[in-house]
Image (cartoon, rainbow, N blue to C red; front, side, top):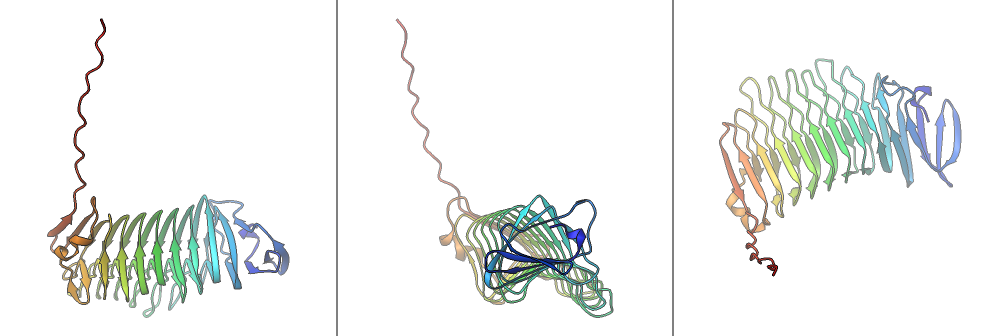
Length: 328
């Protein structure tokens, strides 16, 4: 299915996917692949995926969308996106709100490939930038591939979020989530969850956006719990402007660090926190018992000073040297 030919709607059918384009529906499509005829030219058409009470799988193959308004891809229900090649999804700019790169009202799973999802900018005196990936009420699960999610910029409101969801779970791949800057308001969060964030593997970089006359955004924020048990994670708060607060590297009521993770958390200027748990800076000495050999946690404050706790790997004893047999 070529996106240049018109908007595409994919729904769960009885024998496969029902795909509609230009008011013509193909029923029972068992392998729905959406692509561009010319990958170097962005299309303004959009994709809507509706799983209903079922599940829908859609493959994006080198898709390039930059919509004039709204979100590039909108999904409802339990949707799995399989990515092939490089996919660029950019929401449109808006007077009040920028559009999202991907908007989901259900569960969204990304298991491979490459995708860059970018929220549109807010161009009015109020409003916020769009999010790179925004799940209204479901979960975002990333287990592989390369995912870059950029929030759009805000004018007087908030910068958009890189990834925003009820729950965010990352177990593999490379994830770059960047909150958008705000010209006169608050910076957006890199990864924002209304419930919890769980990272067990992969390489994750999450950066809060900067606020010019407002607070900096947070690298990772989880209202309930942020649990990191593996992978390499870099979380940085954005800078606040005009005397406003800097963002936090990670902020949550409960920060659970364990396993063999490698974490660097950096506070935003001028007064952010690197690791804010229940309103206080997390004391690194309190987590030593939960860390496995090879783990390393570094906290960098707003002045650039750092503290670190690390668990060295055990040194294997040298094997005895066995001389070779001599020849007669």
